[in-house]
Image (tube, rainbow, N blue to C red):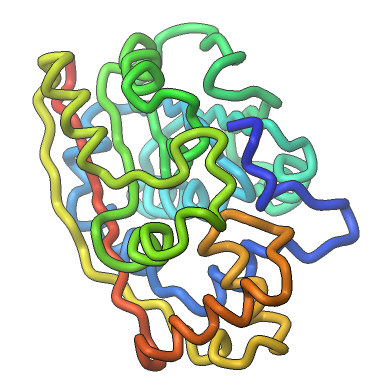
Length: 255
């Protein structure tokens, strides 16, 4: 997780990640899924949650919103290696939320106790070993919820330009490795892959700032040379104005 340079920003910078949040509908799709499958992930009250790689809290806020709407008491602990991310997240938290944010990574953080739900929403790409990390998460969580790329979408960009991805961990991976790991651990799970859409028309112009940010985000590389930005832009032009992206949601059975 510590190598996720795409998320490392100065306090005054606008995160590259914001462009993806603006043009992708995945977070809205995820919120709909969380509402439909509420009883699967919120299976006990109160609910204690530990999120690995919480970032700006864009996913956590969706969980919290649904829990508050349903008058479900909860506690939340989020860890992330970048203090700037946590500071931005903290500013957006309601004073009424029982949340604790800590600096930590997959390899360095030791949970303080047992949690009802362990979360990893698009963060396992930055684990040195996804199998080892899934096993570590399982040791402190009675149930787990993972969100990870499927085959289509960003994964296709990764596989087309693997040499441009900063491959220091598990950046190029799909949900399949998580499922394989859970099977080896004998952890029952339910998998659903949902189709989401990302508007990529801004990426067709390699001089467009938000388009450039999207391309850097897709490749997990904040320092792409100009010629490579133009190369990826041409590839995305061939996909049209909208890129179909698979969002895999995996929920395990409670121990």
